Length: 114
Length: 113
Image 1 (cartoon, chains in turn orange, red):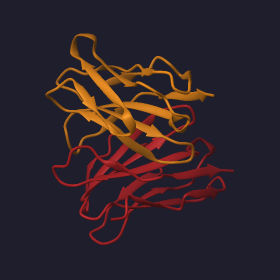
Image 2 (tube, rainbow over the protein chains, first blue to last red; image 1 turned 180 degrees about the horizontal axis):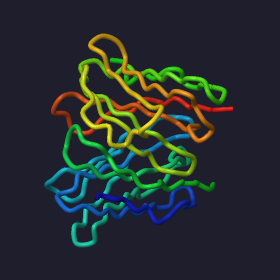
Image 3 (cartoon, chains in turn orange, green; image 1 turned 90 degrees about the vertical axis):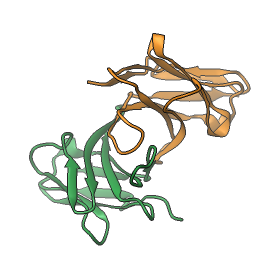
Image 4 (tube, rainbow over the protein chains, first blue to last red; image 1 turned 135 degrees about the vertical axis):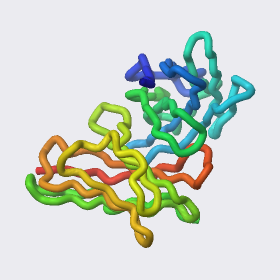
C-alpha cells in the first residue's frame, strides 16, 4: 500500500526567506508525485508533478521539487517566500499519470511572518 | 473554460437527513473522483467514476454513501441518514481520458448538527 508522510505539521518562515517542505513516500513501483496547495476554504491547486525524467521539477508560483529515489523523498522548495504563500501544502502519490487514486499526506501548514 | 464546479459550497444537515453533493467536471473531462477531508487530515479517496460507471469505490463507507455519474448532468455524492462524523469537506476532481493528474473543485463543506 502506498503512503505519504509529511513530518512537519506547521512551519513558520520569515518573508523573503527560503522554504523547504518535506515529503516522504512509500510505494513499491515508480511513483507519480504531486504537490498541491490549499488556501483556507478553497480547493486544491496543483503546484507541480513528477512523472519521470529530470528529478528537479519546476512548478507554478516559483516552487520546485526534487525527487530522490534513494531517500523516497519529494521535497518542495522555494528560494524566497512571499506572504501570499501562507497556506496548507499537501504531497500526494499516485500509481499512474492519469486516472488513479491519490494518497495524500496530512499536510503542512505554512505560516509567513513579516 | 470553467473549472470543476461543486455545489453547494456549504451544506448544513440535521442528523438523519440526506445530503446530496453535486460536481460538474471540467468540459471534456470524463473521469470524476470524490475525496473527503476530515479536520486536520489529508484528503482520503472515496470513489472514482466514469460516465455511468463506478470504477473504484474502495474508499466509500459500506453503508449510507453512494455516488453516481450519469450520462447527462453532474456527478452526485449522496449521504443518507447523516451523522455528526460525516461533517467534513468533500472534494471532487476531474480528469480527461489519458490525462496527467487532475483538477480539484473548491469543495462542499458539510456540517451535521
